[in-house]
Length: 145
Image 1: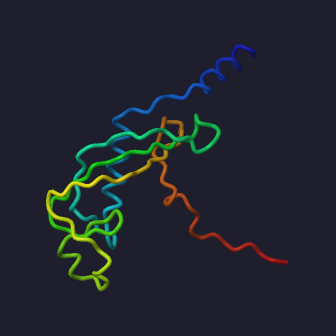
Image 2: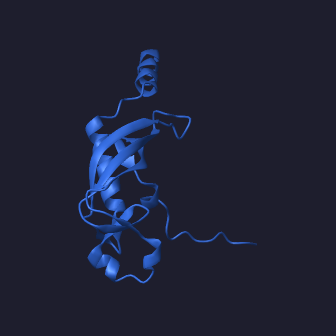
Image 3: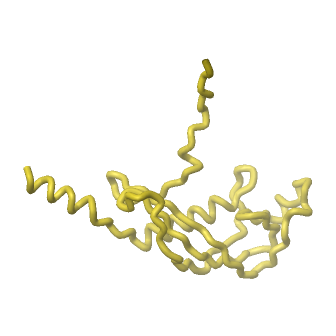
């Protein structure tokens, strides 16, 4: 019994490293999925490079939840209009009413953006964790007596 407890303690206390491929894929997914408007992904951004800035444990128990920050170099593959993480194609931009809040980006212009990815430990290993997809949407208000 003691041996089993010691083995479990050792296996749970040493964090498993994340693979670079898994991290880069999560960054790619986040950048591409963030570049959408009205549910339509805009094909306006390409990733040039991903540079890690560091790991920032979100909880005290690092072995279950990790956050990594990255500096990502992006280039635009066409002229587009940027607001936040989204850069609208000219066609999409023509259909919006508040044009003054968007910034024109030129084709082949390079910018740097900061992104973070959270990972949680699952039975299959480390998996990207998107808080926005895990928030309860149909929460009932607590009853007041």
